Amino acid sequence: MRRTLPISLFVAAIAAGATGCSNGNAPAVRPRSYQLVSYGGAALPVTLRLIVESSTLPGGPTVTCDDKLTASSLELRKPAQFTQTDSHLLVCDDGRPNGVSQQLLRGTYDTGADTVVLSADVGSGTQYVSLARISTDGLTIYRREARSTVGATTIDPTQLVFRSVQN
Image (cartoon, rainbow, N blue to C red; front, side, top):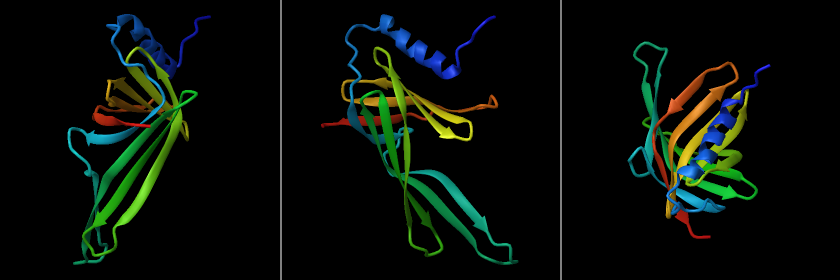
C-alpha cells in the first residue's frame, strides 16, 4: 500500500529541506512581531475589492464601496503558533459612516533555513497556507493558497512585505 503526504506536509517538508540549500547566512526564524508595509508593491491603505450595489428600483441609486486594508500585524509565537490581525475600512459613497472591522487568523508555522510556511484551518474544509521568506529586517509572503478538501486550490501570488517590530 502506497502512502502519500497531505499537500501541507509536502510543502512544509520542502521548506524544511531548503536548509541544505542555504548559504549559511540566513536569518534565524524566531518568535517576533511584524507589521505590513506593502501589499502588492503598494503602501497601505490599499483597496482589496470594490463592491457595487445596484438598486432594484428603476432609476434607483447605485452605491459603490471600497474595502480597504489599513493595517496588518503578524505575530510568530512559541511553540510554532502565529496570529495575523488585519484591519479593514469600508468606505461607501452614499454618505453612511465608514465601517471599521478586524479579521483574526490563527494557525501554526513550520520553518526552513530562511523560509516560513504558515498554515491555518479556517473551517468548512478550507485551509489557508502562506509561503514566506525571512530577511534580516522582515518577512515577505510571496504565495498564499486557499485549499479545499474537495481538491480545489486558489492561489494568490500578491506579495505582502512585513517589517520586523522590535519586541
